[in-house]
Length: 250
Image (cartoon, rainbow, N blue to C red):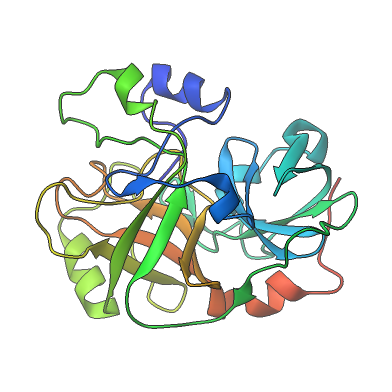
């Protein structure tokens, strides 16, 4: 779910984050109080003063460039950024270890951080990306106008995800890597299909309050071609996410 899709869309994604997950339904910010924006991407409160997002969302951007964020109505300034130590390894035009954390200037007091873990079964993807898949005939304005949305996806096996991308790699060149990634897809495979999409990067894949994945990438058509959404697997990155002394940069 790389941020750039078309020049016009990329410009919009760099502005106010008012977009949406494909399919699913609108969700009120008060119902997901641990969700926050990190620049144009999504993020999740994983510590009182720490947000988790995707590495490709923050790579090459300083804390000052990311600016401020709001968590459950509490305005905070992003003061430091840490990408996974192995994020120099590429996965097509994306990052292989696609996780990053940002430090806030002070703790959030009105909502508890989510729990990190693993879980099978359906989970929700939440974000502010395109609400309609590319190539489905909708105008750019309509694609970008959905507000914050959520959709329930069923998890599929590593083998099934690998098969899905064996002959249909996205244009950005990513490959599925089972130890680092997990996949979700529309529950019944019938229209309207639900999926993560461009602009949802960094957001949560969450079951109840257990965070299991971070939106990373997917097919070029955001599930309209029945391709899965791919997430960085939180359980694999727990040590980095909770590290007391990550390699911060300001």
